[in-house]
Figure 1 (tube, rainbow, N blue to C red):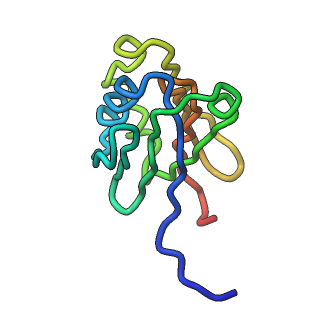
Figure 2: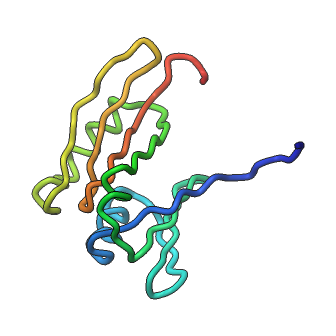
Figure 3: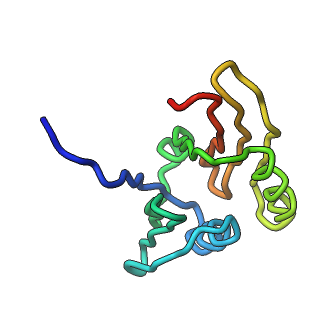
Length: 123
């Protein structure tokens, strides 16, 4: 099958939709409200859909990897946002180095695990 993919946009849920919306805006995503129960959040050409839906098993098993150009700078900016004080349940894990690259981690207010990573080589 031949086609040119233009984007991939995961759908994620939220335990508290309004808190999650605020959290993602604080992370620098631009929100477009699509309906009272769904928004799309974008940064550059990358986007995801946030739904006002919470299924614990789904949330507990959701991980998203977002490639960034400089993990060290991104980590410094994350710390400056003071997200753990502002949002209950948010956890930040410092940069870890692997043979493929480096990444830091953020659990959002619902518990979704975000990997913010930088590859040593293009993968």
